[in-house]
Image (tube, rainbow, N blue to C red; front, top):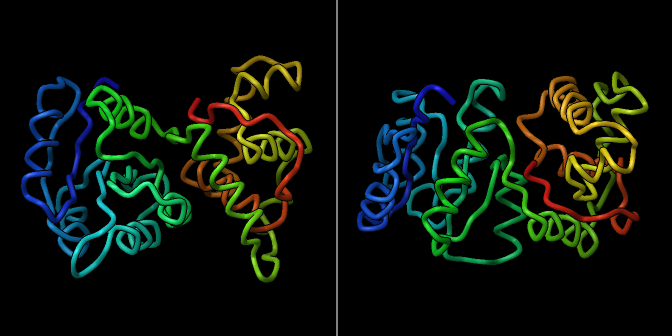
Length: 234
């Protein structure tokens, strides 16, 4: 990106915010737009500062990170609103799944190496999703363990997908990378990226994380469906 990525750091611990600021301010393409100590402050800060990426803690007073992420998803334009990268010390399946379901574009542990955090921010800011194989598997396994109690009808926009786009959507939901999809469908990765972009546009989805959740919740893909689980962050 030619412009600097504006960041909002949201965490109830001042020392954690300071630590992130020290790491990120040294990067030429990153800019700290502001900080917030809880979800309510974060929502106000997003309106005023218009960050590109929000680094979101989960456990906070007043309004936790999951509910804050849901409100940002519901109150902002998917194409223009900030991307949310959840950072937590809690490596619990329910946090991973609920973060993605709430609208986060990625999930990382706070003890990840600084270079991984910086790269994750760049990936999320570019419009992609930080959907590593382990995260994809957890989403799939969550539906295997706890399938929706009653089926949710696919949005009518699904009817606008071509058969090839539907094929690509199902592959994304199985955790396949762009390279794996291209190999399976005998097309180029560029073609796959074009299909992914059209799918997100037609379904009004922010990124492929939301595509995975939608595909399972609406039954477009059944848990346990055959498919290779790869690096879905491409």
